[in-house]
Length: 177
Image (cartoon, rainbow, N blue to C red; front, side, top):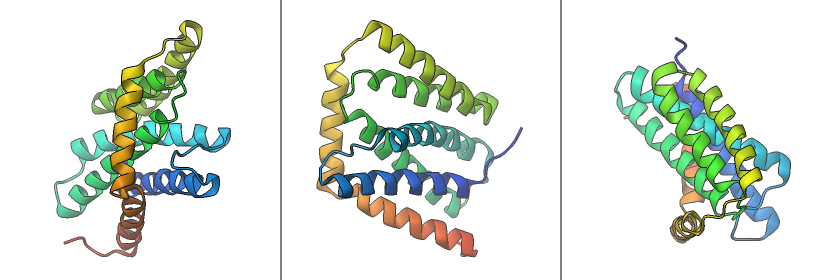
């Protein structure tokens, strides 16, 4: 089984956070509305982050650096997931949750193949959602309240900067105390 380096998870998290932050800056809006290409990339990276969470929990030795990496990857996955759910595209709420949860669960058993299963289940759920057109107001309400908390405490900006600094420090070989 292939064990993934947490540095790659930090890199994906930095990409998700900065993409979300820059889409808000460029659009001049409080809601991160990406263009179709970067929105698609954000969804794939959030599903991949779920696989990194499972991999860090299972296969990496418990050290302070790995715990910091796990917390930062969890935070970037949370912010990325909420930034997708807050868009209120009724066709995307359930499929991205299905893909994220499938990737997280199957990664505990199958490693990186769990991320592929998450992407496949996201595509299948997206197709089903497109055909059925369910609307779920409860998910939108939860996403709105979580996004307001993220914006109120500037968690997006702070976590993007901290995660980038930790990534640079880890790449340079500094041990996190």
